[in-house]
Length: 400
Ligand SMILES: Cc1ncc(COP(=O)(O)O)c(C=O)c1O
Image 1 (spheres, rainbow, N blue to C red):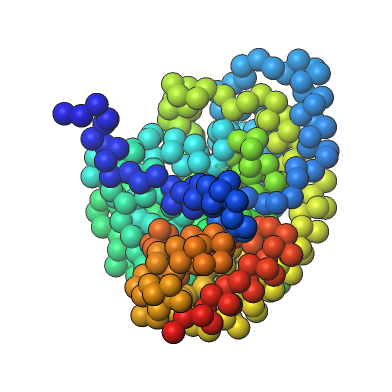
Image 2 (cartoon, rainbow, N blue to C red):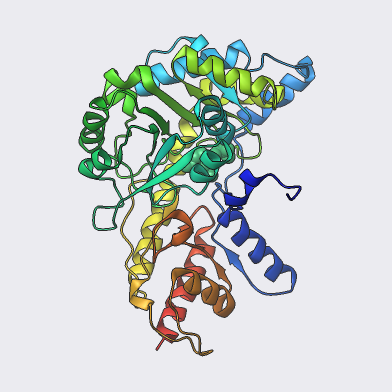
């Protein structure tokens, strides 16, 4: 028996972090590398939010807080769900964690028994399956295709649910595809879920505020109130408020689940950082004006990247509704040979050779459960995006 737990043997380190590390190494060795792997806004945290944190320090808000968040933040979360999503939650049903990730981890740790299935539509955010595994559950994947806009078909959802399905993980807008479900598309899925009362829904709404072209964001408990009693609606300040480093995520759901999550958090991290919680109160209660200003910048970048990638030989890039990712197919490059003589057989070959040849770091789609595709994060400057798309075009044109 080795020292490291057996349960860790099936868990993969994050592929997106691996790409960022590789890009950093190449940069350190003097190569000119553009990293399009990271999933964080390039914008700074707005000043009013920083100021709230500074004031919290000066007031001495530097002690332990309630494990699941200060009352002011839980109230701000309840108000946010009411104002933006039409959802009524009591502050006692709201929960704060040190980031969106621990919300999911706490929920799985609090509910999964060995053999319980967590149903995850592919392409998926890399952490869902590994967090399910860490908590003793079984990730089960149900695929969507690019032809369906990377969105799950209701009949595929219905067919994938078994007696053992404990959670269905829903993520719209999606990391990695950027796909977001319209009200009708989501209703078709919630109709299926209504037929399976043993299945709980984890709705990861992290990219709620990053939708374009007047797209209306909706979340399952809002579209089908009949599901609210078995839905955990989660969100966070990381992406919408450019606060990735502050580590605040939040959720609302049935009290029994929230209490169980609090028990997990009380014996692991305890409360999220007190100062970051006060910053999050300002994020949720303060001005929201910059959200639409920033979304307009992201939309321009999305349009630029989609258009330039579709001009690259062998790539097809759909236009996503939201988030800050595109997820083009590189099927047209498979079987081709690079100038250095390497035959591209997988999307992993494609991203490795692209990084070698042109110094552009992207993440292979197979890491997210669908290939041959790759993910580009366009949360970086327009100049860097133009330059990297030119390099991708040159790389594709060099293949024979
Ligand atoms: C879909 C999705 N959910 C949750 C998270 C976690 O966010 P946080 O940084 O707040 O833990 C991310 C971050 O990349 C994400 O892409």
